[in-house]
Amino acid sequence: MQISPKLLEFQAPFTEVQTQDVTVTNDTNEYIAFKVKTTAPKLYCVRPNASTIAPEESVKVHIILQGLEQEPAVGTKCKDKFLFVSVPCDASVSPRSVSKTWPKLQKAAGGTSKGIKMKVSFNYDNAINPIEEEKTSQISNGAAVTSSAVKGATESTTTARNVGKVADDEPKSTGSKLDDTEKSEVAATEPPVVAPKSGGSINSYIALLLLVLLVYVVIKFAL
Image (cartoon, rainbow, N blue to C red; front, side):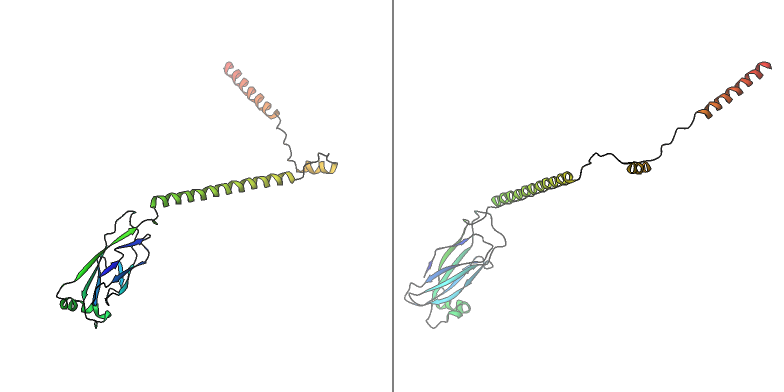
């Protein structure tokens, strides 16, 4: 039995489902039954995972990576492996029955089987570097902020110009004299001027106080 390729390679991103084909060839002159095993059965789906091959014939096996939960760090080596095991069998063996009858097939072959190991490799050529992605995001955010600032400044300038234009469009005073009617209206709207109180009452109070003081002094000296 021969397999091709010898190395199974998957491309980034690894969180997506992708399929690689492996060709299994029977290079003997008798029928063989084969079975595919893997170290990571939860990550891969193999179709068919067991079958028979006629002499000098080949079968394509589809190995499906069902997608990782998250992207591995760039450069991380994949440790997953596959094992293709084969035993000679009778031509009457049904390909669909190989999985169930595998122990019997091994026993009929004398308990011996031939196996070929195949490693899995991750290709990071299309992987996105998280640091570069963050830089790109920061640049995009910075450009968006700058664009918003420029737009705001432009709107402010436009508003200021419009306000100035409205002010310029307002009618200015002609400086003409008011007629008698207008003067009367202005005078009527102005508040009345309150005249200051006279100081006569204050002077009378002071004089009375001095008189009382004088009488007091005279009476005191008389006694």
